Length: 451
Image (cartoon, rainbow, N blue to C red):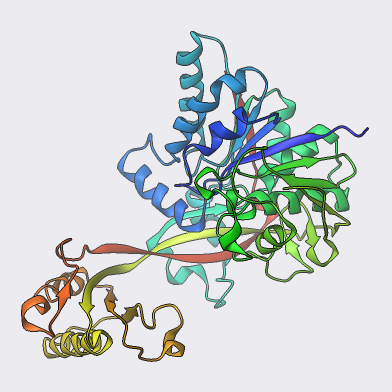
């Protein structure tokens, strides 16, 4: 019988269910626990934290997760996480110290991968001719260089494999691809070569299916959603992989949720892009080759996956400051709730115009009538409607002035209003996303194992 390696997903984003990691290592046999913390906007949030405190810049929730799974790690379960954010060394050191304190000095080997952070080298790279052109607009990064907060290349599975080969019990990365967190342990365990395109593609697909946690095991699942059992006890997904590249997606017995062909399909099309070219630093996977089949209750067999060589570039996630915003809300009650909300919007906009305030953008939504489906919903006389209006501007003072114009509507606008207990809207800095590409040759990763 082929050897099976089990990789369990315990976090799908920074802010996911804190109980999931512990439940994954205690609910049944697993070999690896994969924790995915990073989204595009997360890097900029972490960078701002690091600016305030050089010891910060990583997902602090990870320390709580590690504390909860430490007994399992000491008995052999390995953890791989991109919780390092923009400060993976500090994160790895915190995990090492946590291990020492919890075990009375027993050493925990923590691998840390660095090299994805391009912010310190950005001017050097721009001077060398790397434009970091926006993938959506084609604009050069020079246009916003002075406002850049973070710049991180998406690295692949190679350095994680190296850390595992050097005996790491826990591997912490910065901005690795989500899929690499699952594919790396399979490469390590099965010895897949860097040119074994079909097996590497299988590892990438496995990682893509479980990278969002319970989203493939019943959470946020549209298919027959009313019948999905016990979401309050949802089981997070596990990949049971074999050396040949075939794997089964499942979850621990007795947990809630559901793993089915439809639930896996829904996750597969999430952020898929061109189905024939799912590009990663390690391999380009062909999603049209994927075959799914039920393998019993809460078990889906995935096979037939093909891949081809990757490109010579890495994606770079860049975040930059883009002004300020504020969002305010009021709730209007029946009768004529939509009409009242629309009238309040007209009154507010007229007052803003009279003050000659100039915003980069004003957006109004009528939640309960048209916020989700736009004008398709018509003007049904809903029992209540939330007026949600947001503005943005490069001038913080302009946005501040807007925040003082919402509350007066409670008494001097349309009737039957509520929902303003939170006070004036808060002014927030806008962080915008700038996707770009850079040649792989300029990104050098480094692996260190702390103990």
